[in-house]
Image 1 (cartoon, one colour):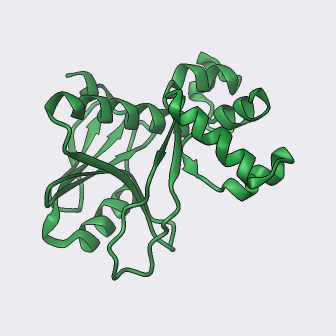
Image 2 (cartoon, rainbow, N blue to C red):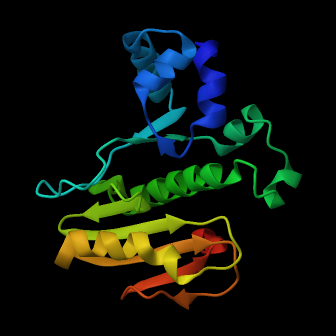
Length: 198
């Protein structure tokens, strides 16, 4: 179990899950690797986030993403330090994404249990980190470890809006800046990260 735990938690949070590739890397069978992943899920150490898709869309990637639930554990096992936050080569972006996903899923449970969560990614690698559904309504959340934004940062929300049609209610791009700003996609805003706690 420890053989899979450290590399998994340290390097795979916030990424697409490829069990076969992981099994090859760990020199395990796919079945054994899948069994260990299931154990990690039952221990609430990792979460598989399924891919959002419409049946008629063939351009969407249907691979789940995997998130380490405890971001402190992920940073420790990944060897990340406080000073690495400002290092653009560090792995803090995926850890931040996993942290936000976990926070929003927990906060949604305060409102009700009828929410569904997934991620969006298409063949052009345009993505939205978290798709939230409640009934026929749908929202998108994108996470950026940056203090500023540019127009292309809302491309995922625009693509999700086009795919979801009338179901799309809006979206946010959580970033490390200080101002709430409108994005090019209607009903979408860039929002400072600290809005998670306000």
